[in-house]
Length: 149
Image: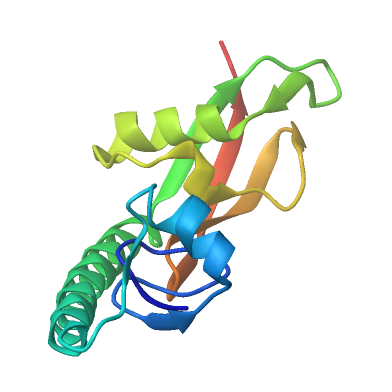
């Protein structure tokens, strides 16, 4: 059965795409959930307008993400943490801690799920953390972990 997706789906495609799916999957999951509509004769025009709207929104999101990246990349984010004598932290610096520090120091609100930490930060010093705000916009933020006074 051919359907037009009304929402992005991780495995099938994006909003406005016309996809071929099993009849039962469409009847039991996609159509009742409002995730798709049947692809009839006049739906092509509606699908193309959905794709255009998706492309415009995607371009705006990408521009916003690039603007945030330009503001965050040159800045060093300072995160205070309790540490022992040898510089080893009591615990670790979490993505939540990093997002809070970014909010306090730059005024930029990020979702903690957008911060990608390659390794657990468990020591004082400078660390690099990845941030993915958009599928095409990924950048590194410098985080300086200092001893909390």
